[in-house]
Image (cartoon, rainbow, N blue to C red; front, side, top):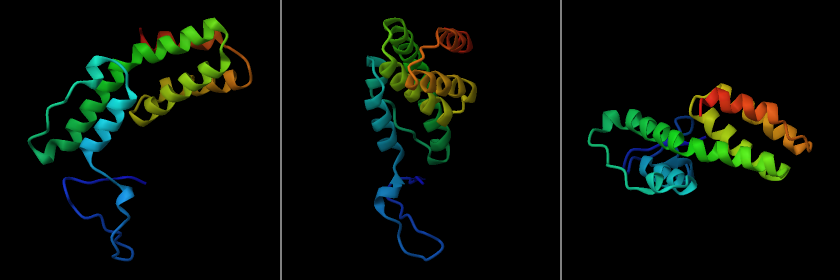
Length: 141
């Protein structure tokens, strides 16, 4: 479980009133830096403006994450398509699994579902070109 912590707030466990381990706390800037490091391309690596209003921080964070997702989506889809065409089941499974996780976390369950199916097929050695086409149509790329 991750807890979003604003600035230097203390994270407390209400059940026993002991401070939670710091590893359970995620500061929004740290999360963005981590995700930017996992996303390729100069747009994703650019510095993002800091949020001025703490009340809007969660909405601003979600907007930033969605933008990073949209920016990385064509490259993620291309990795799945290229690996499928090359017959590299391991790369297909890895790329599809990565996109499935990100899509599921950011509210794109249909994309996540198709990606999980592509990854499951690839782990069995099946490169389902029809599922890749379904994903392509779903994304609209």
